[in-house]
Every structure is written in structure tokens, then in C-alpha cells.
Length: 490
Ligand code: CS2
Image (tube, rainbow, N blue to C red; front, side):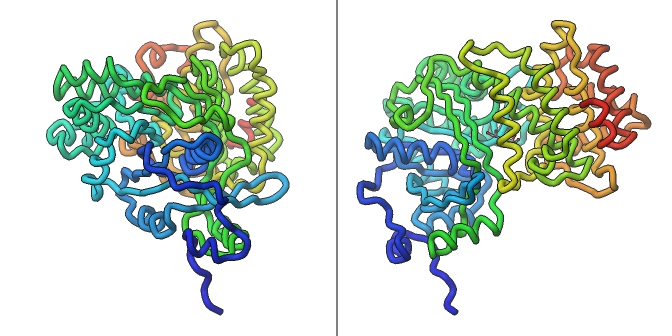
């Protein structure tokens, strides 16, 4: 049997039935997206394609891998930028082909082409999904983190940047010099106030190079905030098989996802934007209530489930919430400890939101691995969980379940599950975290030493006796077996 052909415009047309719809006109590139991971391809890229179908516009996307993933670049380019969306819903799998991606670049290899595009007036939006650590942000000051090696590199060689702030500052410097209007910078990561946070990082970086440039960016460049939501796991062979079965051609880079998607965007695009509002995105004046609710309800419980599961031996999120005590724990965490701290408009029903989240987590077809969510805890725990703990402490309310989640992270950093299975720690602070977690003589010292990591625990919180006590109690409960601790805390 001859092996199947690989997905491309031509093979797709030739293969059974699947024709790219006639009204599709290949757009020019109007968006450069930094961080061309699965999430962007199943989220913003789809909204953008649908917006162009509905209202036109040249908003084709050039995706950039900042990790130099040439294999991904070459795979996507060999497929003419096409890839399939493998949507795992309750009624089965639905495969569609996404088309907004026009070009893929791998940094640092394609630097010249990237800067050519970033200088082009037709590129009006530079968006990002680079995960929390990609922002190179100092957790204490909110400025660019000068201890990061890539930041030091970019300050020394600003013409050859590798970091997000370095790339954006260099591109905006070129636009300012040529008198080209700046692009809008659109953060699509799970950070509180992501637009403002990115602005501060970029302005503080640029100011170190040239105070005039820093001031110009602060005044002239728009950094809208967004709340992005769709559960998008890593691709598996099953997704490749589903794409092949549906398309009759082989897709080497399909993206699995859940049916649900949501996008709330602050409407601040002086250089224009696709008609995302015509295709389901909510364009609003203030994203804050949405992004905080999502971070503290969804992302926080995701992280809690991930660390507890890594210790208790559940591989995926759906397996975790199928364990009744763990589901109950997460339910109570949202109901009693998180929701009461949130300030949302009266039309936002937090309890319905909670129930919808639990339903999304239970999707058995999604196979969202806890190990994936457990990565980068040092970046995720503060905005997802510590902010809520701080609010609970302020109002003198209990936060035992949230403390259990943080304690599970501490024990997770020791490197093995209750049954002794080893796991890797992937985190920008991994070396320090592992040294701290494995070097403690006893649980009390573990908690004290972890609380001294100021990149994670800001000073007033770290010194709060009630937090220390709750964390110690939770670590001790976990020593008696994670499943037993889950039952007690549920
Ligand atoms: C997850 C998120 O990996 C993680 O840390 O919590 O990627 C989550 O799936 C998305 O934010 C959902 O929108």
C-alpha cells in the first residue's frame, strides 16, 4: 500500500471531498504571532480566519517559534501553513482544516525575515502566546527581569535580540526610526492584566537602551489585555490518526482541542484589527473581571488538580475529576475559597462558570496530561493561587484547600509520586526549587525554605504566620498519602 500523501493545498483538493471553501481568498500577512504553539493555532488563528471569511481584511498570520523549532516550521511550511483542528467533543471527533497561517519562522535562524515583517506597515498586530516565563518579568517589580540570561544578552546586543522584550523593543525602535506607525501588541497568555504587564516589561527594557524609545513605546504603543480560553493539550498519535481518517491525507502537525472557546479582548487597536467581534469574541472596555475569574477559577484548579494528581497517580485531568473526592475538593475550593473573592459583573454567574469548568475537565476524549499543566509552577502559582490566598488572608477567611494545592506543589518538587514514580521538574527556577525542596531536613524546614523564594512568595505574604501554618498542616497531611489528604480536605 502506498503511504498517504501529506496535507497541502493540492493534496487536500485532490483527496476525497475536502475542498477549501471557494470564498477563501489568501490574505496578505497582517499579524505576526510570537509563540506558534498548539494554543494559538486552535484559538486566535481560528477567530482570525473566521473574521476574514465574514468581513475580509488582510490578516494572514506569520507564526514564529522562539525556541528555534525548525522541525515545526518545516512541517507547517511543507503543508502550506495548513493544519487540522481535531476537536474532541462529547459526540465524537470533528476535524477541520485551518488556513490563516501564511508563513512560519524559527528564531534565531529567520531573524532577517522576521524583522522585515515587523518593519512592514501592513503588519498591524504582533500577538504573543509565549507562556508566563516568556515575558522575562521580575515578579517583584513588574519590570524586565535583569537576572535572565536572554535579557542580559539582548541588552548587550540589542540588534540580535532573542527574548520577547528584546524583539519587541528592536522592532518598535525600527518603526519609530522609519516613521511607521507602531503595531498593536496583543498578549494572549494567562497573566493578570497581561497587556499592562507586557507594556511595563517592554518599556523598562527599552528604557535601558534608550530613554526616548522607552517613553515613545509607553505613549504610542497599545497593549490591550485579553482573556483567552480553550483547553488545548499536546498532540498525540491518535490526533494524527483522526486527521488522516477525516482528510485522507496525512497531517503531521494537527492540534487537538475541546469544543469550547472564549476570547475577551480589550478593544484598543489603533492600527485596526480583524472583525473578531463578528465571530464570537467579546470586545470590551475592561477585561479585568474576566481574566481574573478565569485565572483564579480555571487555571488555579487546573494547577491544583495537576500537582495533587502527580502525587496521587492520575495521569489526565479527566481521570482526576472522575475521582469523586478530588472532584469534591475542587468544587469546594471554587465555591468556598475562590468565588467569594471575585468581583464580577452581576451578569457573570460564577457558580454556573464553576459547573461548566467541571464539565469541561471531565471530557474523557481530551487526554489533557497533568504533567503538562504541572510545568512552570513558579510562574503559575502566584497569579493563579497566591493572589486568592492573599485576598482570603485580608478578609480573615480560611483557605485550607488552596494551601493544600500549594503544599502539593512543594511535595511534587521532591520529584516522585506517592508510589515512588519519578517525574521531571520543568520550570525556569527548577534548579533552585529542587535544591530547596529536596534539601529540607523536615516539613517545617521545607515550608520555611520555600516561603523564602521571593520570586514566588512576595514579602508580606511569605511572612504571614497563618499561611505558614496552613502550608505545614497541608504538607503533613500529604505525608499520610495524597488520596487520604484529598478526602480530608474535600
Ligand atoms: C493550563 C492552561 O497548562 C496550563 O497551565 O492551565 O493551559 C489552560 O488549559 C488554558 O489556560 C485554558 O484556557
